[in-house]
Length: 334
Ligand code: XIL
Image (cartoon, rainbow, N blue to C red; front, side):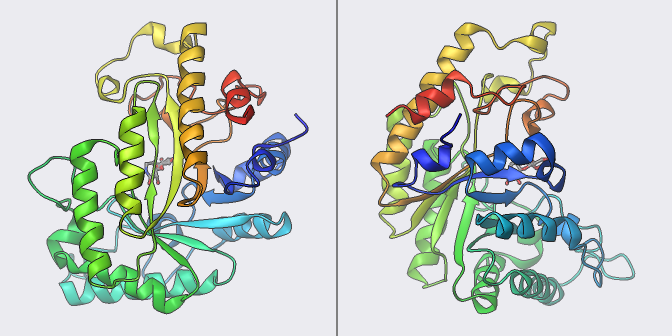
């Protein structure tokens, strides 16, 4: 391939990829440089990895990603400042092992966000400030996480305010998954509407796009984009991958056949799904300001481990030998 994804999409939006420091050398690095012009640290900037003890930050992995991006003229999306997963052990407890108060937790959140955002000021153009705060079932809007149990709704507003104060130029995102499914979409919309109306500094919504060959439908995707855009927010697809398994059945199914199952039929279905979603992204280029792939190639992806450990998946645009798949050709052939 002589022309990368980023070149084909020059007139549209940056094309990013999730990386670990390991992927910044050798064949992965070559592919990254050839194809992408934006990086997201897959794990290195999450609170657990980057802030393992209250008074210690682990900057090395995150720095290496930001430095690589700078050397190669790429953008960086920071991910993620406030999330209920991959949190450090110390975060919700005091020295005696009791759950901290709201005041203490908010002051820890402020220290964390201020320190991390400050360090990469001018080098990270967009941050996922709050990740996955909305619940999956329809009885409540917000997830019943420790953040919410201890602070109530307020931690979300605070997180955006702290980030904005630390870097007024950064584009701040609320990021979540399954945002095309009607019930989740409505709950995310409710949260965002409230934030926007309260003039909280939220500038965009990150739709993770952990999709499959079965969903979303064209109509679901369009509806989600239009609904969120109607709030005046920019939209980025922040963690795109297209699983060859249905997400819901994922939780149960693990068969021997799953081990090597990238059949021509699946290849065709995946190609069509990729082609469709990129066509829609292009149509909405006035509001879609970035698309990031959650994985470089099928050689390694988090979906090999999640949600069914050990089941191989084939969700990216490049195969196990890092060669462009048919889906790649479909995405750039317009
Ligand atoms: C995943 C990473 O890809 C894995 O390596 C890690 O073990 C777990 O987290 N939503 C998110 C991402 O916002 O941070 C998650 O990344 C995938 C789901």
